[in-house]
Length: 425
Image 1 (spheres, rainbow, N blue to C red):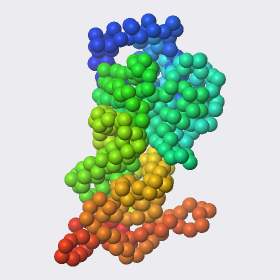
Image 2: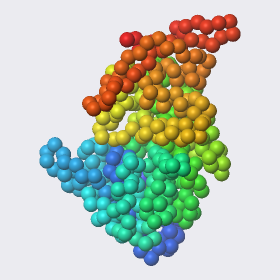
Image 3: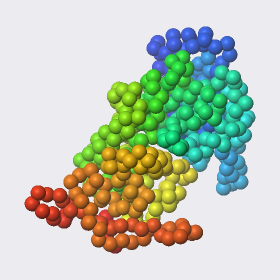
Image 4: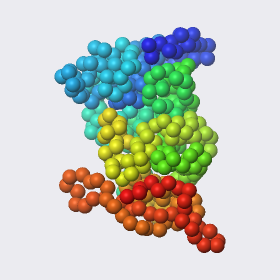
C-alpha cells in the first residue's frame, strides 16, 4: 500500500504542538471555512491534491470538500476521466497507483469547480491560463486569493511577464502567491519527505496558504518575495536540460556538477539583474538550489534532454516529449525559448553562455558537445551537417550541425579526444 507507507508518521504528528495553535488562531480569522479549488489534474496536481485534501479534512478553517478541475478525457474503456477519478479515487492516466482522498471531487466544468472558492490552486501548463481565467471570473468568492504552482514564464512587448502577474491581471487584480520547491510528483504522492517554498506579497495570505500545503512530510517555508521564488522555479528547468545533455554524453558527475554551478550562477544573475530586491537567501531556499538539484537528477526535463542526446539526431525534443511524458508538457524548452527572446531583445545572449548553448542545442540543432565548449575553453569547428526529422507541412528539415571541438591552448590547437563523438553519422 503506497499511501500507507508514512501513515503512522502523519497520524502521530498531524496535530503536533507546533501547528495546533496556528491552526486554532487561523480558524478564528474566518467566519466560514475557506473553500479550495485546484485547477489542473496532472501528476503534480494530483500529488499535491493528496496533501491539500487531507489538510482540508482536518483543519477547521478549511472547507473539507476540495474541488479539482479536470480536463475531460475519455479512457480506453469509454468512461470519462472525471467519472473514473470520482469512482475509484485515482487518476489512472497521470498518477496511476496512488489513491486520492475521498473528499477530493473531480469536475470538468471550470465554472462549477471554482464556484464560491476562496482559494485557487493553479497547477496547469501556463499556455492554458488565458482561456481558463476568462471562465473563472465571476464564479469565485469576492475575497478569493490564488497560488500558482506553475513553473514557467511568459513575455510581452515590454519583456518578462510572471505567470502570477498574468493570472492576477486576468482575474481583476487577485492576489496570487507562488509555491515552488524540490518536489518530484511521484515522491510527493508516495509520502517521501520534502520541502517547498511559498512566495507571498500579503503576509496573512502567506500564512493561510501555508496551512493549506504544510504537512509533517511536506514542509513549507515562507518568503516575502514572489518574483524570486517564481523565476527560480522556471529557470531551473532550463538548467536541467543542460544536465540531461551532459548525462546523455556520459560526461560524468564532475561535468554535471559544473553545469549545475554555472546554471545556478546564471539563474541568480538573470533574476537579481532584473529584480535587485531578491536576496541571496531566496536562492538557498527549497525553491532555489534544492529544486535545481532534484530536477537535474530526476525531473522530466533532464530525462527528455538525456534521451535527445542518446537519440543521436533521430528525434526532436517535441517527439520525445510526446513519447515519454504521457501527455505532460516539457516546461524547460518553453522557458528556454522565452528567456532567449528576452536576452536577444536586451542584447545579452553572450552574457549567459549556458542558457544560450542550451537554446542552440534544443532549437537550432547545435551538437550537444557545443555546451561544453560554451562554458569551457574550446572553440567549435564546423565539419558537416545532417537533417533532423521534421513534421509534415514544414518547409524544410531542421539542420543539425556536426562539429569538432578543439582545445584553446597557448601553444596551438589540438582535437579533443576525451569527449565522445555523440553524432557519428
